[in-house]
Length: 434
Image 1 (cartoon, one colour):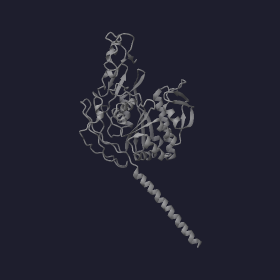
Image 2 (image 1 turned 30 degrees about the vertical axis):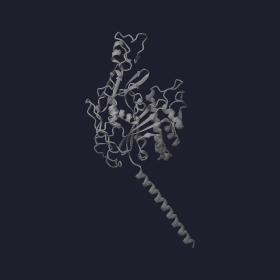
Image 3 (image 1 turned 120 degrees about the vertical axis):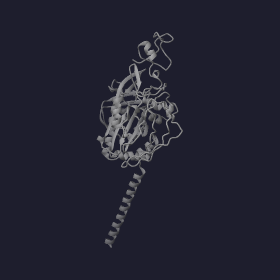
Image 4 (image 1 turned 60 degrees about the vertical axis):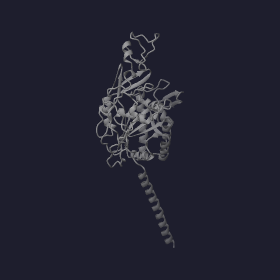
């Protein structure tokens, strides 16, 4: 009797274990069927540089992107009569030639931008190239002060001003930012995610904080931004608020700060991200991932679906720490204009960086694919030959020639007479950059 009961007990146990195993397999299979990579959009070729611009054809999605083990396939886009509204914005801008052709297998580009709480500017702009076949990630920061070839007069010609400028103009800010980055990269990022400070804080807190070696003690108070930082140097567990403060800090009230300013702050941001990546990969999983998905879905401005994020997360966990790299766009010149900092990209070095670690296409990006504005001292030029808004939207050649010093002002409103005296008499009212 006892033997029969024991046999029945074992059978029940085996049945229960079998049901649990089958249920677990069902969950795994269901999850793998649910998660998926983002669909790619086939770009529409633009006219060659120097040709009068015509409205771009509306982009249409290509075929569904297969799993990384299969080649990425696209189809020719359908051309409609509807013009691309973005192509109508900057009159007088010479068109560039956008990249087309075969894609590298399993390579995606993602725009990640962080919005400043006070200004609404995207002071963090990062292009992430994710090779999901070889499981390598390369993240490239574009400094917030980077000058771009736009003709807006009400906002600085800086990449970080595009997002709030588009909102003020009634445009889609993410689409506008992708459009301007297309001018800088030769292609538009495949997808985007724009986050604010509060979201980053929540993400770090959700994963349990991040262990980080703070390079130097920082103290900073900013009543306008409601920003108060007091973090000692040394290896410590940072919560979400502290991690964000470390990433935002540049100059302290007590004389402390980074000698290289914003560029050194970018380096520290890279170090924080490396620490988060290394900590996560060492665990072999992403802590509280369902909660992170909920935050991403509800709080992030993105064109990625939850299934896309889940797919990228699984690809990320297959990476090694040494295969995750960070870099910063090479700087050519640096200028101060009316108290506003501008930096220009070094075109040839930037082109080499694009092709080495960002470009998702088989063919190399060429200089004629780019629309870069370069400035230094009393000169400015665009790599495509046309400065949007004209040279006077950058600085006034006429007033500069009359005075022998660099003069900046609104287009068509000269501040100096032919003899170099201020218009209307009185004191020196011109805005100058020296």
